[in-house]
Amino acid sequence: MERKKILLADDNITTLNMGSYMLAFQYDTFTVPSGEKLFKLLERVKPDLILLDIDMPGMHGYEIIAKLKSGRTSRDIPVILLASKSGIDSELEGLKLGAVDYIVKPFSPPLLLKRIELHLLVESQKRALREYNRDLRSMVENRARTVIDLQNSVLKTVVDMVEHRNGITGSHVERTRRYLEILLDAMVENNLYRDEIHSWNREFLLQSSQLHDLGKISIRDSILLKPGKLTEEEFSEMKNHTTLGVKIIEKIERHVPESGFLAYAKVFAETHHEKWDGSGYPRGLSSYDIPLQGRLMAIADVYDSLISARPYKAPISHEEAAEVIIRGGGSHFDPVLTDIFRNLTGEFELAAENREVLRLTA
Image (cartoon, rainbow, N blue to C red; front, side, top):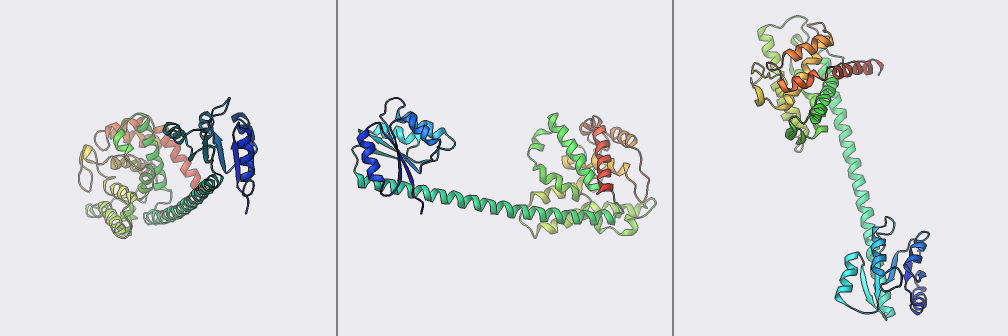
């Protein structure tokens, strides 16, 4: 077993000689007569424990220990203070500065050795505990990353199923997620809806947005893929995809621990077709009764639907889609968010183009 290193700092040559002789049987011992030489030695040797005389000329013991405890490489070295007289104030001052013990000279060699042994054992146990905690934290982080990767994989698979059932192959949910990011960044920058946004888990929010059309997996193909306009009865069934999405998510919730991710997903699924003037569905909510998540997704979802081809329609240009959103402020969309969108149309267009390029080159 590697021998521990003890550094003894004292300006008294007798104490240095006696200490060196006494410690040499069990430890590799280094002696220095001053604080200046102590720090010079620390440049090439890291001791396991320091015995430090308080009353030394030049740099005082309290000054030395304060400097030791402020150093990145020396702050964890245990320090036992040596003093020529006892005093509660002196002991308390040393312990406040970070010393682990206080011994009055002349000291009993067996007692000093026992105290050194004790503090080295404590330090060894502390080091083992730190390593255990580090390993445990690493294991937890790896496990969490595995769970997140699995969640993302399942999420992507479900989203792909929904999109293909809906006859969509252009990564609609990926683009709407990016549009939400653009809107959120602008809102934070302009200090809009600050309290609500700051209460959100941004990562969960953006991930869960990809499930906003989950309920369409339960809609008949004859309606989802119909090339023409839906009848009133068919449209009523199509509108059910909002509540169907909520029911699917609630089924998932019953089998998993409490999840903020799924709570966000339910809001997106249920409210992204509500309109500011109350004419939307499924609940006919209006104005601020519509959750902010739903009001944001309404803009992202409608914009992307307008510029994308669907079985029942051809796409329109970015400029035309942007005009539809802007005109819809105060009727279909939150007017505050519409004003934000007005200044972001270029970013929306770029996001749509980049997503399309990524899809074609993937």
